[in-house]
Amino acid sequence: MDSSNIIVENLEFELLFSEAEIQQRIGELAEVISQDYKGKVPIFVGVLNGAILFLADLIRELSIECEIDFIKISSYGDKRISSGQITMIKDFSADLHGRDIIVVEDIVDSGLSVSYLKKRIESMKPASQKFVSLLIKKECAVVPLKIDYVGFEIENKFVIGYGLDLAQKKRNLNAIYQIKEN
Picture 1 (cartoon, rainbow, N blue to C red):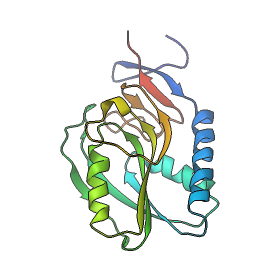
Picture 2: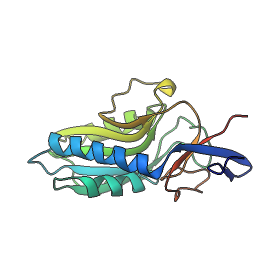
Picture 3: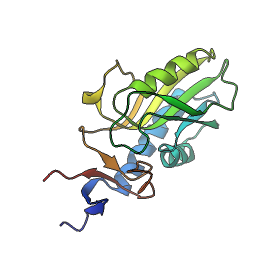
Picture 4: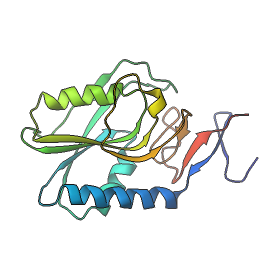
């Protein structure tokens, strides 16, 4: 086993993105977002639980003012594959009407969560809404996707670390690991 590999629940994972690579890409995303929202105060909506680390690091790199809010939805439960059914667990706290909204996701695969959130936010009549995701698996999309800011495009492999979990474990890793195929 390679020293950069880890074992979780009898599954072997290999390093996909190091902490340095993640932080560099977040800095680049923050620079673009800061330019796009210069003179505005957007609300960044973190999708719990996975996006918490990405959101925290992203907003610290911004050169603009911002507000934050959180929403919690689920389509996975403790499984590695989405059920396709979206369940609202925690709704928005902020009034989104007339505001610039940036939804922050850890990973986008099927696009069902993004589609659900887009419709939910549109019903609140924001001034604008955009999506930023640290990771995207375009080949898994079952609905048309428009993610405005993307950290990394990845293959259709299960990933953990940096907010991403396996049955709520390993979110606290500083890097991102993908399942190793034998």
